[in-house]
Amino acid sequence: MNRYLFLFLLVVAVSSCKKESDYIYETTPVTVQQSGAVKNNVKSTTEFISIAYADLFGANISQGQLTKLGNVYASFGDKKVVEDRIILNFLNVPGLQIPATPSINGDTTAFVSKTYKKFYNREPNAFEAYYWKEQIRLNANVSPLVMYYVLMTSDEYRFY
Amino acid sequence: MNRRKFLKTAGIAAAGAIAAPYILPSGRLFAATGARKVNHVVFCLYAGGVRNLESVQMMDGNLMPNLLNGAAPISPDIAGAMDILPASPLSQPLQNYGTLFKQVKYRRGPTGHYNGHTVAVTGQYVDIDLNIRAHPENPTIFELYRKHNSPQKAALNSWWVAQNLGPYPALNFSSHEEYGAAYGANFIAPTWLISQDGYDVLGNPKVFGSNEKAAISNLQQFVNQNFNKSYTDGSAGVVNDNPDAALLQSFISDLYNKAQGGQFLNPWGAGPAMNNDMYNICFAEEIIKQFKPELLVVNMQDVDVGHFNYTSYANNLRKADFAAAHLWNTIQNTPGMANDTVMIIIPEHGRNQFGNTSVDAYGRYALDHTAPVDLISGDQMARDIFCMVVGPVGVVKQGQVINTAMGESSDVVPVIANLLGFDSSIPGYIGVKDYNSCDLKAAFY
Image 1 (cartoon, rainbow over the protein chains, first blue to last red):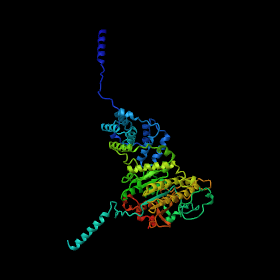
Image 2 (image 1 turned 135 degrees about the vertical axis):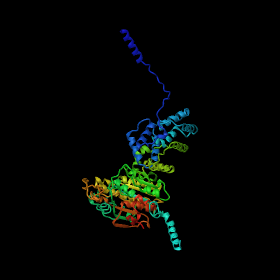
Image 3 (image 1 turned 180 degrees about the vertical axis):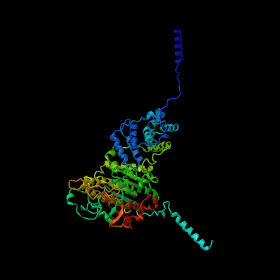
Image 4 (image 1 turned 90 degrees about the vertical axis):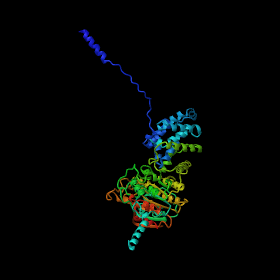
């Protein structure tokens, strides 16, 4: 009897155990980013000001500063004009976090890529990366400050 | 075809050929002649709610001696509370340079400030309390001007200068699908923009060199070409082209420099009497001197203190009076606008006959403005206003006073359109009153 019981248990144990398979999916890890083509929403005034401040100073804007900026923003009808002026003033405020020019010359491609991700939340396409790299390398007037200003006053920066 | 029939047919065809070009899509006959009476119009909204009893009827004496003839002294009980103001900038009261309508109506709709302003700039009554966060539904005078004036003019030619924020920034263009931001006016609330807060956040811009600017221009073109949308498609407010935007930046910088230099501390010699209305007109004058706009609308609102304090209301009525006269003096001293400008002054609505429960230190009851939609309840005196039209000899009838009931708020837009020569180009279905049915045309030759 014991012999049959032992055989029965052995059969059950062997048939119920199965080695787990390890599946390997051969994909490259990706970071989720937004394509420029699918940015359909215009940032609100508050979003625009808050994001611009955070992009340049690495900190949240104070409520008092946001109120002041919201009021002057409302007090002029051509929003491109007033936004341009807001950015130009930010660029003159102490505490601005902006890379020094030599670091660009060291790795221009990386700088362009990082700047696009910072302001546009996406990688530059090949054409954009090449164009900016050439501009930065060949034109001494295209500083990090200039690139920041250009991207922050562009149409794409106003959308998300 | 016999000879008679041939002649009849040919005659009809010829008449049709002549008339056809003048039948507009609007259904109106005859295209615009483009004949202007003047090349500039300044529309001064003497707003905040002004009651005829204190203005043209001088119940408390002549509180508006810069605008109105008359030497009636201010009522003794409140006279001591009036601030000292400088002497009139004009050699005679303003009414002598044009026509005064003493019984004008804000005919329909609630007598609210935003309703009143909306009627003033669209020429159409609104019978509901408006959504103060939205642009007007009907096109504004700015859009009508910029769309129908021939040739079309840039935004720099039209300005809306508001004394306050709140809903007023929305009045420089409408949400009408055929008009909108593309035809809007430049808007400025100068007492907010040119302030210490404004200077703190906008007064110290980074200045790029000329070589940097050239590079920036190319790079901006590059990045915007690589994006499939334009921020200027409606959501960026009124749009000025790049050269005009640069002029605006320069103008703002100039105002900040003047403010920092103390030029706006006591610009009119009025000392502590200078209120927001006066400052708003002062900045409107800066726009006039800088841009010589063809159409400028500016408002004042400090008389609205009348909800709480009658005597302050009377005091601010005097300040608005001085400011309006100062404005006309500046226009007449600005080459290009002098003798080629019509100025229209009108409150957006009046105030109640009966006071509310607030009593000031002089025992005077404060006044609301509560005429609602039904034209029966509330206090219908809030619909009674005046209007003054001044301008060049030969265009505006000088020294004329109209004491009978003539004119209404919705007359102003067609009058401006007629003065600038584009009234007959406005499609009939827009709903603006026909100029020929406006009583205010009695001001003109």
